Length: 133
Image (cartoon, rainbow, N blue to C red; front, side):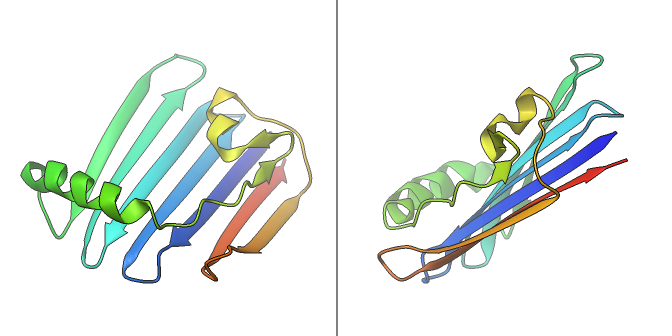
């Protein structure tokens, strides 16, 4: 039985940040991926979940400091701000990265932590954790 979790956060230093998260559990067959974008006191988070045993997929959206009707305006503002945002540090989950974790569990070390400073001088923090039972 293997559980894997990975997270990466990047920010522009002016109130905007993006967090990517992934979780996989080989026993339950559940894979989850989350993407959260925040600008000052407003935010939007999307979580996708897939059950590898039943092939059922679900998507959930959550809003902070706004409602669903304001999502389009938030997305437009995000696109303007995101151009100056540093890219996420690739984080390992064995031979996989966080975006491919939804394809199934992989091997790898017990824990990997990466810290990278982009040319703009904005720090990023990423971590990956894997437990075997």
